[in-house]
Amino acid sequence: MTNPSPDCDPEPEDPTTEFAKDLEAFKPIPAACPLLDVKNLTIEFATERGLFQAVKDVSFSVAKGETLAIVGESGSGKSVSALSLTRLLPEPPARYKSGAILWKGEDVLAMDNARLRSIRGGQMAYIFQEPSTSLNPVFTIRNQIAEAIKLHRPTVTDIDAEVIRWLDIVGIVNPAQRMKDYPHQLSGGMQQRAMIAMALSCQPDLLVADEPTTALDVTIQAQIMEQLRELKKQFHMSIILITHNFGIIGGIADRVAVMFRGKIVEHGPTLDVLRNPQHPYTRALIDCIPKPGARLHRLPTIDHAALSLTP
Image (cartoon, rainbow, N blue to C red; front, side):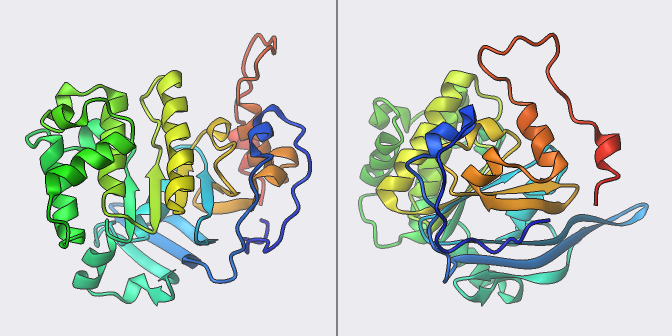
């Protein structure tokens, strides 16, 4: 496992892989004073068979304006780690066994409910992986975004204008009409854009995007990722991108942490990890990405039996 402490002044080399080409213009942001600092976090769940550790001694940090991608397959602990940042995991069955989650130097695990509510959405916002289930089907898009604005930005007087503004920013055509729609009246891509608008309307310092392109076709996936890139530049915010797909992190992630069975097995600047992966699991994930022009009878798969023997 590589050292999770970010390099304060990396010098990326010229990329040599197809998936590193988009990163030429990106350099990691120095993280001397991280916005978020997770230290040796271990989370376990109570089950009928006893305690199960879903996250094991995980450490990472995110600086102001930086994007960290957390990559791994389903069940590796990515989403559990993300939800733990504002203690969204139900306790019980979840239990924070050890470690610390420092938000602007303040320990999230020691916060009371009132303090947590002020951070959730207002300072740290989420885009969840399935918008059709995350959006409330009985309320209009307008009502759901307005609720977030009223809670976290009470000084806003013209709520409708603010809702329209954010829907327009994320690329929804005719936002004044679309905000009156219910979630089922929107396509999957428009639902995800509405979720992004809801998250950004609170003007958070950190956006946690948990599989933001799940269940979307490849064209819409590219549009959503481009949207996140542009919004990051426009609002100078930090992003944690949770994904299983190395192919979508190019051009947006400054650093990447690879999770396998609840642990971070590799961590470093995105260019370095893509060009020279050190852990067998990282290499296996990258090998699984379809390469344009490659003639293969069968895509590579991950040999979990062999990886189980890897420390």
